[in-house]
Length: 562
Image 1 (cartoon, one colour):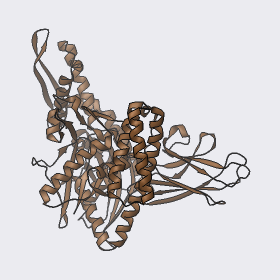
Image 2 (tube, rainbow, N blue to C red):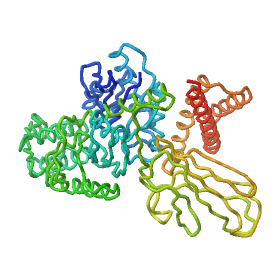
Image 3 (cartoon, one colour):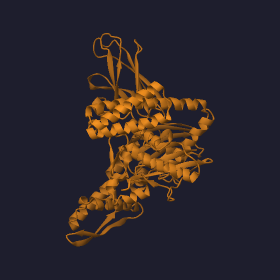
């Protein structure tokens, strides 16, 4: 059984396929959505979902929400006395969804398709796969959220259609153009922003309310974390109600100040809310226009909405004005992504059973442009955004100095022509180049991007045959460099390696090397030697890379023998 998971910013959902129909799996409380909130009690118990969200009001310092916006960051999140990486927090949400699915289905669940925003970069996708692994899931595929929504809508519709999927969730926005031809689903283009969604709408409305309380009552709510948490929850509920009502009253009775209780009230009106969020909605419309232009669609046949924030009336109004289409009915924006993920999981299972001859075919695109640095701080683009996946692209570069024996390959993500205008994904060194005059060497740089959007980069000196390669991982920035953070990173890497070598088959020599390194890591952790910790971190990351490669090779072999 392969489950589909929509790992959302605000809420998450899990689904499975029954026959030829995808169905949402309710959680242990009977709810079809699970809040993406994680909390820890004073006794150290981890809470996830509604129980964690209920703790947020009184234990804000022990509760984490909206972690999806931090996926791919190499920074720690405080969860009471513990500090976790974003993928470790997300793993707790995934672990609960896995348990709920197993309880509901009455069987063990080991495989999943997990969705991510189309605009997620490689580091965020890698972190999502790691979160799944930590939760005990084999992540068969990382699927773009709007692609999943399009798949769900078009699943049993026989006619060919050009779809626009507008996905506005709690934390992210994506728009995807997909061409559906009989049993073939081809993504033509995707655009989006990773920090644009319902949370930003909440923040604008919350700011208005706080200003009103201070002006009318002299009450500065921002000084009280407990009150601020209460207000945040009330604002979120008010925003939802404004989708069906013209106004809603937000009230906080018995707020003490100066010995006198205050009864704070604020009436939120849809007109004002629309005015506040219009600039953000216009950004989504502009991205929608860009996606349609890049898709090459001469016309649009259907508009599909996904994400809870797509219910906002202003969204319907502006999209109707822009596209001339009303959103398709019969689609639940909160559930359509999880349903599509489950359907895709079913497609993958069919492919495995039929040795790659499944009845349906889905092809997505890469959501970002990738390239390498060349001379004078410039970038040469190797893979362009919206290139169909999987990708295998090559570009030849050369040396910048006479008799140069090594070349550093700097991998970049973005549309800019200059290095400074792009995001650095990582660097690796190709050494042992045959010495020659400047510009004489030929270094072939190749990019391979799989269906998950995971990037593998290789460089080969065509004369000497020297080759180096790397699977691009999140790059660590200067903010990550304090001693305490490095200690935590070393501890986390060591835990991961110990777990991996229990599962994987490695040679005795490699096992001995790992054991020796882990002993060294324990020693430098006790000594708190920052320089030694940095060395240990680099060495442990290298081991993790090798273990990832071993795991991937093992999984490929298993599939070949299946």
